[in-house]
Length: 447
Image (tube, rainbow, N blue to C red; front, top):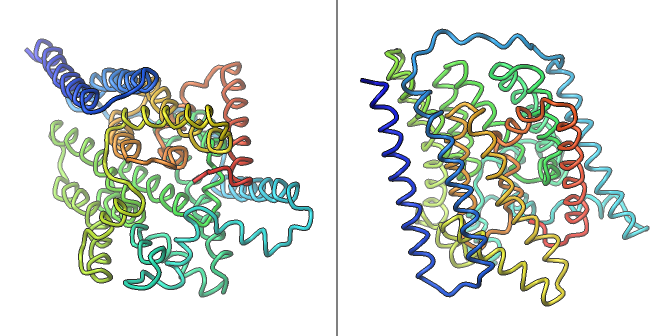
């Protein structure tokens, strides 16, 4: 009976999903006037997304309904220890800082140490450092008041570091570097236990080489969010539910996308529920903890501005951001790229629109290959994260948002077993990473 039910159930779910996606696409298409290139970009994005979901559904059913014995630990234990990984992370941070310094030094032969440090206040780092120093402001300059849209997890960490370092830029750089080093260790342990040491080593390389990896060392929240996300997954893997929920809560207190960690916790809990396993009270508590972290941020909004959702007003009115459709993002990013090329605005074309489009389509392409290899809860998390992150209107930071999505480097580690493929992919990622770092150092509209 089950053998007959599951394929039918999968067909129904796939049919409903495709119908919803088709209806959304049709409504979007009928709701405006678009050029051929925009429609093609949106259609390609929606088609890639659908392909990922089609490959995900069987893995989802396997996670929930197939009988499983006790999971065997991978035979491949790996060669790297935590101290080695920590040292590698610090060395890679040094490479990134040196690379940025060399680019800046090439442009300005008289570059001083102070000017180099001030450079790291570019992009959103300025806002995070202001919050760390002054907390949120309820009145004053508009550019300072609207900083309420940046969540408090990272600024609080920088504030504590500043008690020792006594300089907020250095504190931010220190927190980011140490968090990345910790994240690399935790990430490696998670991937090694799930997929083996060799895959973990390759995944670590891809994480370090991902275009936009320099953001991990900037005074921004990426590295802390990376650490908390990896810690949540590792705790979940070990079925330490409350610890996983706590890390999820801290992640949602650091980035709003931390709320998406609810998805893998929910997927794994339902799987255990269907297989008759216990400890459901702890799993439910963990699920409740994840949004609690974001609830703490809403409380900060209320205390500062008198409205727990004030950040949404600032995002809409100041940054022109609201929740939209991910394939619409592909369309308008294509339109802006073509417009920039036509006007000869190569700075925004090469530094903003092309990297954004690469991230929008590249993430889906990677997930397409990963959907049959990743654990279903990881893929579900990636899909939910992608829909929200890329669906944001007026998206400027797609590579940065995708850099912290851990299923992407895990997939790359899994698909690069063959040496020739691995070398080609390493080369491609290294080139993309170096290119994007140069664009960032030259301030070519990289956000």
